[in-house]
Amino acid sequence: MEFLEGYIKNPDRFRTGSVNISPFTTDDIFRNNYIWHNYKEDSDPVTSFEGMELTITASATAALDLALRDLGLTPDDEVWIVTTSGNKYISGCVTRTIEKYCRWSREHSARTAAILVNHEFGFIATQVKELTSYNLPIIEDAAYSMYSENNGVLPGLTGDYAIFSMAKMFPMQAGGLLFAKDKTLVQQDLSPDAVSYFKSCYKFYNKYRRHISAARIDAFAKYVDAFGDADFEPRFIPFGGEVPGAFMFSAPGADLGGLKVFMQGHGIECSVFYGEDAFYLPCHQNISTQHIDYFLTLIKDFLK
Image 1: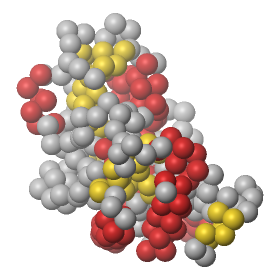
Image 2: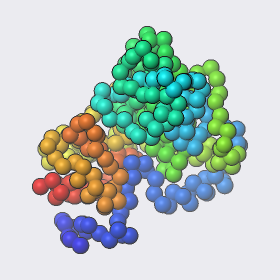
Image 3: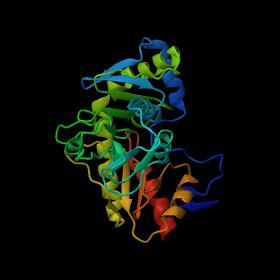
Image 4: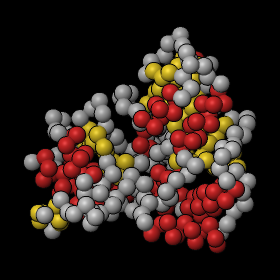
């Protein structure tokens, strides 16, 4: 055990903190149970958001699976993955889900049968409208970007499908939402009680949309100030109504793989933005100035 500017460094593994990319904490298990029992919704798997009819799913990954299955892809088909940043990084849960049905690529080819646009970490990929010229089905992956918009354009309103993650936006352990244009797709293996639970929590937390968005934007601004003072530049900056899902900073030449292991050892969910010298940290409605000071103190100590 070491002492570092008022913090315990390398604590016992059973006494680490726990700060997730999601705002979820242990106490939310009991809050969500209370929400379900006291604000219980019906088990109809359909709800709505911004005029879109959405299907309740167990996760954003389950929503993506439903969309891919609906497309009827063959093993020789490809899904072309496009991202906000253009970087080659893409989550393994996305690629593994695609691989259940077909191949995936980061480029358009003669095999391309669908396009998946990843609105990364709350930052909108602005090329969706342009991609409609390919006359291919478009899936908008807005798992981190449910409340984001770019100059009034919301993710999901342009493509044929959109997936959202309740677990990344709300203090929940699971939960996703799927939009499918002109149809309703249902996750058949989700029990009526599970549907009612997810729907109840969605209806409850979605009422606080403005607070959630404002708190995330405020947390991001605090990150920019604190990390800027330490000469770490943000990789993305919110624009035109974007609501951050993470804070990412550039650290050229740093041992970011080692930093990931070190920070996760302190109970902080984080990772490397692979393909660039960049690293991301939680940025949600419960992140405070104290969290940011703690993260930065650990990072500076590791990288010094």
